[in-house]
Image (cartoon, rainbow, N blue to C red; front, side, top):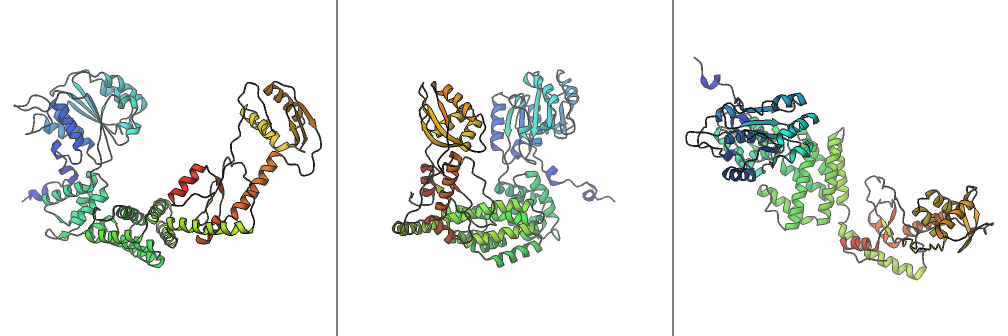
Length: 582
């Protein structure tokens, strides 16, 4: 004797609970409202573009649109988004077997020949339904030729033809196609709404799953309804018998997630600088099946919640159990906002490093050690205040004991990129920029110094001449119409004549170029600038503020100094609550 219950082939939840009407679609209220208004006012577009992440309902919405366009009953003879009962064509459309509703997978039929074959039938009227509806899934996979073949028909289709496209890669669709479609962006379903949906389905399936377990599934689905239903399918079979409940621990083990409370404990240990405890806890979670990458992701989420709790003053608004919210509030109370944002930046890099590392566990452990080292440093705002206070004391001491050189070199044009210092914090010292060279814009050009001559050569496109002037000319004297200098050993032989020719062309007057031995110690422009840079670097390294900073941040190294404008210096100082200093 056959048992119908066991002879019927099992249907996965994602197919069994596919929406059968627009009311069944969750999380897409804006799209449903727009379509409902369009059908009510008879302003239905001829082409639709549905985009969103996988499993969000694009194909289902396309079939519902085809059903709405061709909905017909004894009472209803026109298009409608309301389906009070099964229409004449509904069953065949939802089963993808209606002759006037053609579904095409662009991933497997990408060529222009496939598109032309499909479009050849557009001009013919529908056989049975009101409209011929063409549904093209993953439309971004079409070739350039296929898109071009589609354009003309898409712009001026016959009245009986409608097009519905679905894609997960909207940026790969040509703008010429997008501009001819009414676009709907299907958004990710919120975790709370998806949890409610999963709970309703589990009740219909007579499956008991804890609310915390359903919440874990909803978060793991990342807004995808299909992913959520697939995970729910997997969770239901975790129960020991029909009457038992699937616990949060079982769901967590199934997903390979770490306990959120334990991740919060791990975050708290790292934030307090407990390196041994943090490494021990991470290893214990790893031994229980937790993925280091997911642990780093969970710590990022918790850091965000801690920062929000710090800014808002409480953690009651977070989506978590009361005990988790309480612990988040406690950690937020122990950290400053500067420390919380610093932890976020370090965790963000740690998550990337863990994903790319050949050994994710080792990368996660090293990230925890960096967090513990950072926990021993003072908060950024306190460090800024300490530096300011110690700097003022240092300046007061230096004022009575002598002065350091204040020569300001020209701002470096392309400062080198900072190199890694083994995780030690970096201290940057700002220097005042040199005023920019002013070049006269009068009709009769007047050049009053060798530096102005070099700058004008650069402005006129003679970069080689500027380089020769700065590196090969040891100036003896400069006056209008006459330059006396000693060429450096590497100077080109034609430099005097070439310089004379250029000067006369720029200024419209006669110039005399005299070669003469320069006094000992005379420098070229480049040699002088290099010397000034070195003197400024020596002065920067002995600056009281920098010395105070290096004393606070043990192990820090000065990588470079950069010029910044007075306005930028004021902004930087204001961000740290420090009064700008000279």
